[in-house]
Length: 307
Ligand SMILES: Nc1nc2c(ncn2[C@@H]2O[C@H](COP(=O)(O)OP(=O)(O)OP(=O)(O)O)[C@@H](O)[C@H]2O)c(=O)[nH]1
Ligand SMILES: [Mg+2]
Image 1: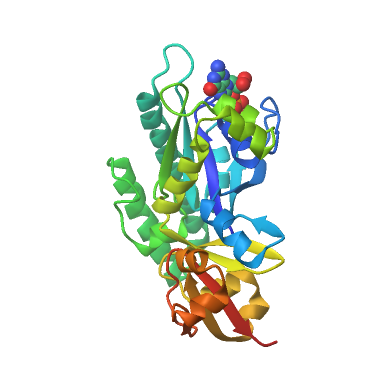
Image 2: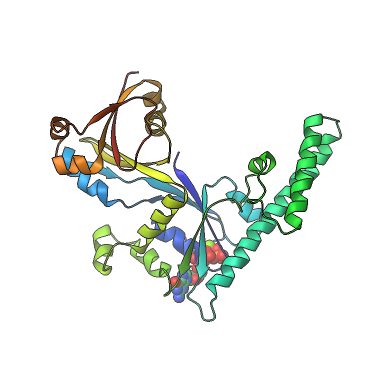
């Protein structure tokens, strides 16, 4: 499953503009409806790896991006399942105060979480009337959590099973993006997203500023990137840090995980330097690993499986 990110920000901060810049989706900024799209994660290593096997197609890893209009508990509630929040801060209009906006937004997230806890508590109280011991315990837990939040505490600072099940917004990693001259010009990036990659690159001096945003997301979530390389496709994938070759197989296809036999592992730079798998093997740089191998950053995996 692709990593999922929710865009948050105060009204008119540039959320849909960021969505368009990331996904190249060309969503209308004026329509007040949620947008969902896939954002490719640029990775220069893929371009270097593709010639090794003359891959016909390059497929970058993707992030699933959600853009909900405005703020408020109901809208923010749509983002409870996402892995991280991308927070857009207005830095382009006159009198803009991105730092203050970030604080306001964090407060809104906290209010949304409080609202959520309160609703859950009301529901649990209703259900607990049946006398069920587990439900009574949930009521007690939620009451404690609500008191903690009302006393100025955050859910992040309240480590309890109760809070995990609530999928709080305030415990998610936040990557802040300032929209404007002091940060990233999202308007420009959204316009460049409508051009071809070559045309867009010709406008810029270096890589897109959005690459850095993707990198910060990857870091905040502790993800590693692995590759699969073949004549038909050179592809990048993301995986949570600490996950195994079997998890990587499942990411590709459940059948591959089910029939997993073993896995050939090459570091991406070894494959690029050697120029072929045969040369890598000759130099003893290829390893054979089992299901429990912990995937490392930049691994090229060739999973052997039978179905
Ligand atoms: N000058 C300037 N205008 C921008 C920039 N980014 C966005 N805008 C404009 O600001 C307006 C709001 O941008 P949106 O991307 O719709 O903001 P939003 O956060 O999605 O807005 P809501 O969903 O309505 O809360 C649009 O008219 C954009 O064209 C920028 O960097 N500079
Ligand atoms: Mg919008």
